[in-house]
Image 1: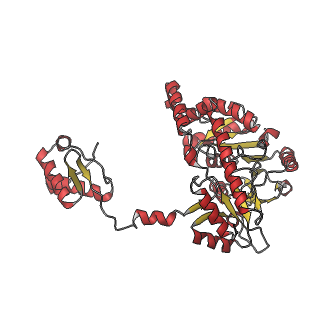
Image 2 (image 1 turned 135 degrees about the horizontal axis):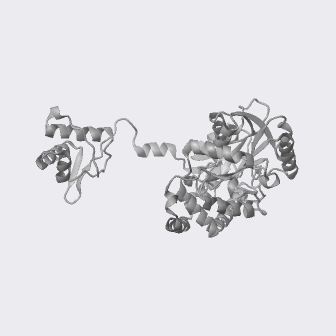
Image 3 (image 1 turned 180 degrees about the vertical axis):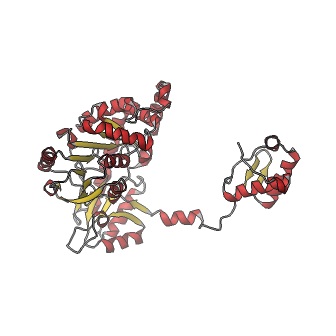
Length: 449
C-alpha cells in the first residue's frame, strides 16, 4: 500500500515517525486491519534507515496500535471506541424483527448470474469510447433497448432520441422540476412525502390533488400546469386510475398544454390480469414517463429513465449535463444486454409469480376481517384500521415494522375522519421469515386463526 506520513523533523526521525503513525491510527486515516508497508520499503520511501522504521513499528506494537505476526506482516490494531455504542447494540436498535415496510423489492432474488453474464458481454464488446465522457442522455445501446422494451411491455411511445437515462427516479423528478423553473406541481394526496421534498428542494412548489377510489381527481387541477401521478398502482392507496379518469386527465393536459408526470414505479407487477398500459401511450406529447430498475432489479443499480415530449428533451439533457454530466455507463451497457437477451423479461415474470404468491398469502391470512386495498398489483397493500396510533404501538411491541398511511397526507390529520391504515410491503422479507411476519401482522390486527 502507499502510505502518506508527515513526520515532524523536530521530534527526531524515530520519534517523528512514531508520532505520525500513532496520529494516523487515532484519526482513523489508517483503518483497523490495514497492512503497513514492509520496513525496508517504508525506509526507502522516507529516506531513513530500516532500523529506524523497525524500532518505530516495535514501539507501536508494544503500545497496542499495531500488531505483528510472522508471515502476516504489520497491521493496524482495532482500538476500542469510547465515543459510540457497540455496533451490535446499534444494529439491534435499528433493525426490526419483522420488516413489512413498503418501498423495496426482494433484493435477495437479484439475478446475479444473469447480470454478471450481461456485464461480461457488455465489457467485452464495449468500444473504448464507452469509458470516456458521453452523451448526458445516456448510452445509445440502453436507449435503443429501452425503446423496444417500453413499447412492447408498457405501451410507451419511446423513440431513443426522447429517452434520458437517469440515476434513478428521484434524479428524474429533480431534473424535471428544475427545467420547469420552480413551477407548481400538483402531487397526489396521499402520496410519498419524500417525493414532495425532492420537488421542493429542486425549487418547485407542491399543491395537493385528491385521490379517491378511482384514482387522482383531474377536476381539481384547474389552471395548474403540471401534475405527478402514479396511475398503474397509486402509492400508497394502491388504486388503479380508472379509464374515465385517464381520459379526463389527458384531456386536461391537451386543453391547457399541461404536463403529466407519470411515475411508473412498479407497473410490471400486476397479478390478476395483463398489466395496465402506461398513461403516456394515450398522450405522448403531454406526458413525461419516469421508469426505473429499482423495483424490478434493485435500488442499488441507480438506473432510471425518462421518456420526454420532444420540446423538453434538450432542456432536461442540459440540466443533466450540469448536474452529474452522465449516469455511469457500464451499468447502462449491462442493462442493455440484459434487456436485449430477454433475461430481463424472464426475471420480471419470475418476480411477478413470486410476489403474487406473497400477495395471496397476505390476503389469505388477513381474511375478510379487514379491508385490504390495492392488492391487484405492486409490492404493497393498504390495510385500513380504526386507530393507527394504537395499532402501531402493538406493532412496535411485536417488533414489526410497517408503513403508516397518516405519514403520506400533505397536511396532518385535522380530525375530519380521514382513512387510517397500515401500508404493508410484501416485497422485502425473505421467504423463510415471511410466514412469521404475517403471523405478527395478524396478532397486531388482532385476527384469530
